[in-house]
Image 1 (tube, rainbow, N blue to C red):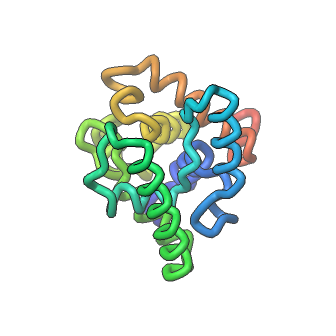
Image 2: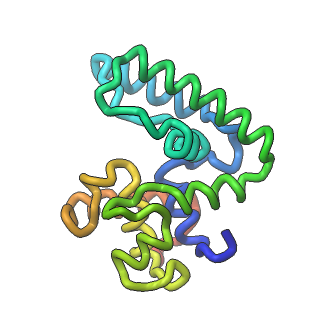
Length: 179
């Protein structure tokens, strides 16, 4: 983790899990927010409530999940993810280790697993050399790696990158000048 710049770490936390440092593996507030938004939109649950810990579990344990899974299957998998996220945070008891594993295994499109691979592929530089904007471009990919691919869909990535930067500003990771 000490080889991954703070701006990369903060970009991912700002867009994926703003309460990462304070929750125990699941984000109750995020779950209620997503449920409330889903109910208001006629049960169209488009907002995620998965924490970075849950995403780490999903990406490394539930590798066989499919997009066409039924509602029951999805609920069952989410409950399993939440249980395992709680256990992982309890057993590891070190957020840095969880964040490091997440940043080194996350799918960032174009066959890139992890931020180092993405930095080389998209910017031809080591992750330690990324600018703030480049950090945000890479963090922007996570929600939908195909749709937010900066090479094949630069306009979609730009929208999401701007959201990453806004979240970073709103959460105090960057100041007005950097934003």
